[in-house]
Amino acid sequence: MQPTVLIIACLLLRVSSSPSAEPLSPIEKYRRLEFPPKEENFEDGWKDRVAAEYDIINSADLTSLRAALKDDDPFVRAIAAYALGVRSDGTSADALAELVKNDKEYVVRIRAIEALALLKMNPEVIESAKKDPDPGVPFVVRLVAGQIKSETDYAAEIRQAYAKGIDRESMGTAMVGKAAPDFTALTIDGKPFQLSSVLGKKPIAIYFTAFDG
Amino acid sequence: MHQQAQLRLKKDAVEMLGAETYVVLALDTYRTRVFKEENWLLGGGKGPFGKEKSLVYATPLSDPAGRASAIYGVSRRALRWGSWAENYPHWFVINRKGIITYALKPTFATPTAYQDDVDNVLKELEKAAQ
Image (cartoon, rainbow over all chains, first blue to last red; front, top):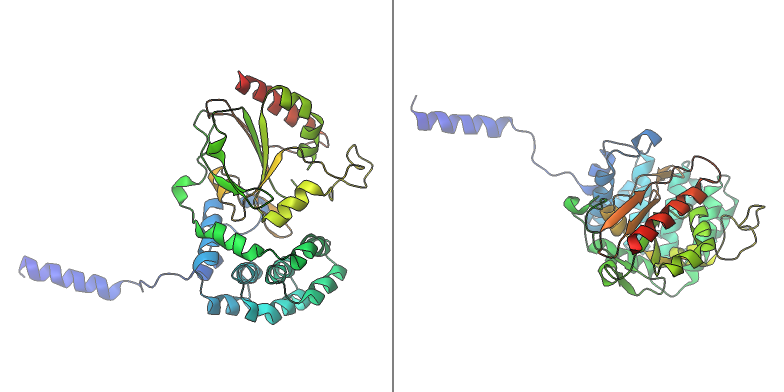
């Protein structure tokens, strides 16, 4: 056999035997995260989690997000609920309210409450969740109580922050002995803050925390 | 919140050093404001911070998409309410040249571990001020 013919034959064989090259949807990538939310996974896979969330908020199509509210996996339902709130998808309000009232997983109920608060819809459903048996749920109801009444569009604020994107190379680059990586944030008045505007002028202590940290 | 409350007790020392302190939450500005202005977590309790309305001295910063938090490597590394929470707490100290000189991941190993954590941060801020 001529070498050229052999090469073409090999290429044809490779194409015919390769799996579908269809890229995974953002929701599917999230579902397949290697390290699920368990305590032993604190240190593992966090960059994947961050990247997957950015993908969902920025680029998951609304139809797949709406469908994901009925997913078997509660973590998929939870992220879909939050994303629909951030994306200001008012047509999902009733489905989100249904999750608040009836989803068996509190992580989903919490995310659905957050989403409804971002949408500023179904306040009576949020209010009714004060009686939820899981203490985390009434805590979040209290936390979002003022948000739903506010005229500020917090969903737009969150969307704009996600729209800046993030690349893996920049994640986890803060190290002792190295220049402090710059970042942007917002003051509580919504004004932009840039770390570089204060770097090199004064000693600085920064505490990154969770609400209860 | 104990870390922030303890820092507030030490604000004179921070000001003597001419230092700036920030607390970053991977939350929207609404929740960051609640964190700053309301003592929900320790208020009403019998502890040292039970009677104060606000416990936060550091300048609060909202990081709504957790971007700054991810750059500093602290994002989505803790669990709360069955899901990945916004940040696992970390301190960073930066000197006058813009170099990170100290990083601390609080262990919360004892009920008062926050006191040692804040003392260590202040010691490192003192070095960073030189």
